[in-house]
View (cartoon, rainbow, N blue to C red):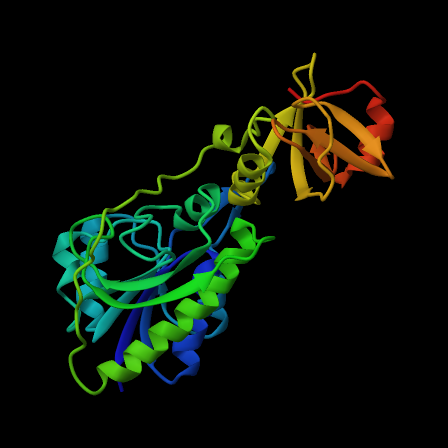
Length: 306
């Protein structure tokens, strides 16, 4: 039976781990990031992959140094190691230890959107089509030869959360298919072709919505940063931050100035450069999430976003 070493951390990596396990492959060890403080109370919380792997009785390790990761990889004696959103670089000394090296499941059609947040950048730039790539890891940043790719059409209402969920499922299917084919012998390796683009991690400031931009640009940014790092704006004349939890397009053109707010047919609208959007749910700083309509009743007419 083929021996698999799996490395992953967030919810996105759970479905690939589940699929590989349910396909009957032997998962000899799981690597994941150590537990970290989460939330206001800083509760030490294990990764989603750690929780799932332990529920399934898999051996989980949390290497904190390159030397430890190399030693544990050697000890696993895996036929192949698979990384899915692991969250740390694999040191060169570990790359050739499994018989078939390390594979990475990446959520874009490489070489487009190499880096930490490919799904977010695909949405931010309005890509109509994205997909998944499985590649042979080398010492570069997502530069290895491709083992498989699969296209996925982006839906109009997708956020980073929903698109990642879809790609996680499709990527899991691609991985299982590759592992089944690997049982029959070496797989073709195809070099990446085309001009690469890069997807660095998004910061909180990247989540600030600029109402002076077009409707398309504003909604694309909202989709890209939802739920993390989160879309937000500021109430004009204050330093109060407002989280934008749900935002959607409308059919009316609207005649609101950028950032201007108005209520129309029990909907809260906000102006952009070339039209308006509907604000559906918000989270004022220090308060619970609420409907935009309830929030609007509290701040009153004349309020606007900066």
